[in-house]
Length: 198
Image (tube, rainbow, N blue to C red):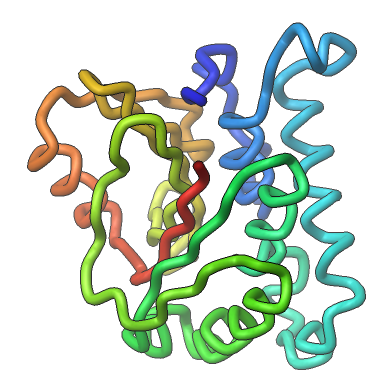
């Protein structure tokens, strides 16, 4: 499934923390199947669904108020799975130092995912671009939104082009070269975690 072009120029609201919902929605959105929703409304619906998975998660009790409302990777993965994807999460312990002092929450709450049949590789030392037919949700630092903040973007590959959607700006960029695409991910501040959907 490719990033839906309907999300071009669709940016999340300023000062919002909806990026997880927007990133996932850009992959899931089908204007025929979800004809009652505009892209931005569908993205907010996905964000609310992600939040609903976090309310009943014990780790929620540990989340500092400063990140309440953000989309934890485990919840994003669960919603993706609920929508029919096989889900795998790749990260490493570098994330412990990359998420503004609460990286342990992002890292350790992924342990529960194996109970739901989601593969988690916590020893993935680098980022690997998607192969054909695979979509990704990638954790980066995006200074367009806020200083040193975590941000989720989406990407996929159709066999010829890499597509990258960033809800901070609403941009959908394309790349024909894997090396160039990977360089951009690191320039955005790759934060040592990505989720693959197949």
